[in-house]
Image 1 (tube, rainbow, N blue to C red):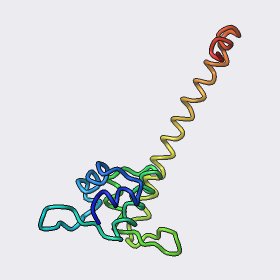
Image 2: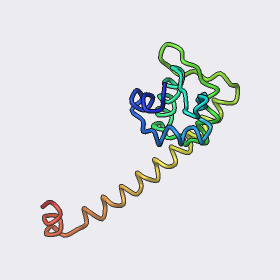
Image 3: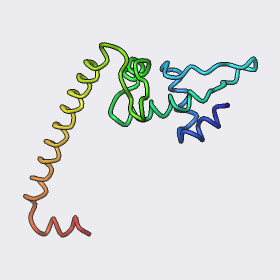
Amino acid sequence: MRIGELAHRTGTSERLLRYYEEQGLLQPARLPSGYRDYSEADVTTVRRIRSLLTSGLNTTTIAHVLPCLREDDGRLVPTCADLVAELQRERERLTGTIEALMASRDMLDEVITAAPPESQLAAAR
């Protein structure tokens, strides 16, 4: 299939698909004309990439993780011995980021609630 069809089927822009290829996440075949030729497996791969991005992983990490995953009853299962440790490190990094964001939100809440009543009325408009 051509890039436009893959983009349509995965809800991903053609530009992002080219970026995934640049990052080594996708490796489509090339036709003699130079056009990319994607397979059904690439549809699954793009969906996995999107899911891993949503979970907070960056493309560099995904490039390491992707070859070590298989699907089993709709769940991604690690197949490489060191993958679980790498994912635990990523989880710890995400936890740190979440904690920092929550602290920032709490600080903003304190500033907002400390504002005089007339400021709060103006903000509500």
